[in-house]
Image (cartoon, rainbow, N blue to C red; front, side, top):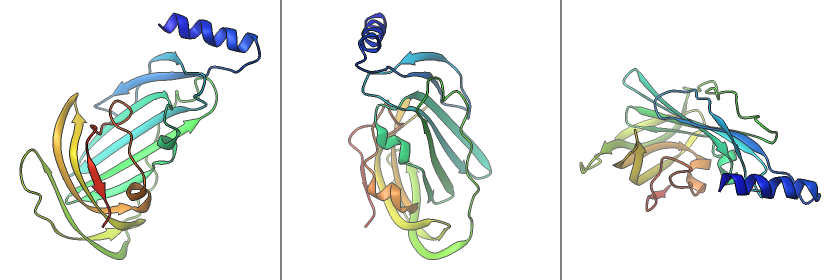
Length: 193
């Protein structure tokens, strides 16, 4: 199949129809860096994606990075920051438009911990436990209250997850792509009441 896609891309370039981008493809579910082989993107894909997801909780940091062709261009604008109980979550994409341009790793932006006057119910549970919220003071650009219920892939396995807390506005208005484009399993509900 890869050979056939490569032939189609070579032919499309030869006839002036288009150009097939090549992006680094790799995945690290337990770190903030990865390197891998090149993948030839579908002719309609114009960007490479590096997506860093970082969760900080109780002094521990868990990072996951995925690099690939940006098959959903919306993923390029999903930078978000959320706080659920004692966990702070960062979603940081980086998209670019040249061959192999996603080989560099993505870094977290500077954190803004200044309270902004918004308060949200906040909790986080994994499994079948009830999510019992406490009040949380939001910081930085977290101006919305978000509620999520669904499964999230962690270390290759889907885990039932309930989240409530502070969020940046863009997380509320965006329909998150599902696995394998993100760790979110299809069938989730997310809202900012």
